[in-house]
Amino acid sequence: MASDISIVIKAMRLQGLLATVSPLVVGTVAAVTVTGELLPAALALAALVGFSLHVSMNVYNDVYDTRQGSDSIESSRSMFSGGSGALLENPEMEGTMLSIARGGLAVAAVGTLGLMWISDVSLWPLFIGIYALSAFLSKYYSAGPVKLAYRGAGEFFVWLAFGPMAVLLAAAAQGLPFHEHVVAVMPLCGIVTLMVALNGQMVDLPFDARAGKVGIVLRIGLRRSLRLMALLHLAATANLLLAAAIFSGGWILLFSLLVYLPLLPLAFRSMREGLHDADALYRGATLNFAALVAFSVALMAVFLALLFV
Image (cartoon, rainbow, N blue to C red; front, side, top):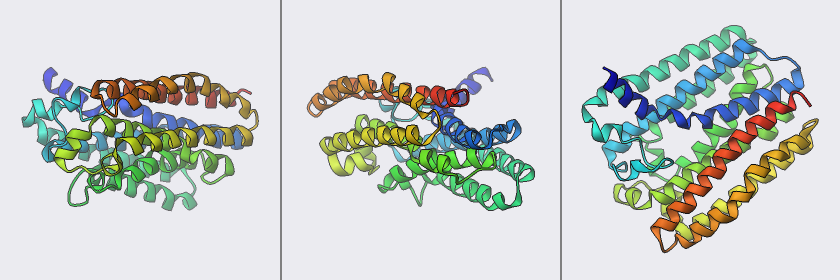
């Protein structure tokens, strides 16, 4: 039993939940800076919805990427790409994994009903829409017949789910879905998560090519993908500057750049060398991933600090 639990936890990839924590914090703070009041029960329910959907997506992806051959023991060794490798080593657990993924959708549905119970009726369509689209993406990001990640459409939905949708869920839970503060920060966390996804695609390129998982990196090649990554870093920085200009006391947001930008020259130098050297590419991708994780953690810290400025 203990072994089965450890396999399930591995497939859930709980370390990746930072991609949900960050937009929930940012969206909540954006709303509270306007309303002046935190609704703890609503935040708890929004977190339940977000985490349950994210876990469901992770487990579904593990199942379907393993079935379709894009996950391998070799690719799963990376901390930021590939799947968990749990099913590759324990194929008999597939039924259990599918039950957990479906359970995650059920828990998120209960959380959504809870949000509707404590919120104004005008917000109900928003909560229902966020849940419905997120539940669809959780499974069909990788699962057939849709397989968004295999058709070059997955990247847009990664940005949408972990940016605008997650921020909107948090802000709507606080009763303020479309204020300019909320809209201004909607893209930011999604851009960061999209860069993590592209980072993984760069390292996973040979595995994805064999499995026919046609993401942006496979479509445009490594060299153009590095240029796209640079543009996304610029977009994230620009979005942060916009938020700093809009929020009262927003200057404090700029401190998040201090732990983020210094790592990028080293990362891009290695990734450029990685155009001809797989080991250099992995080193650069690791540095880039470290910069993005540091940025996400710093974002949460500086947005929380806004409440006290």
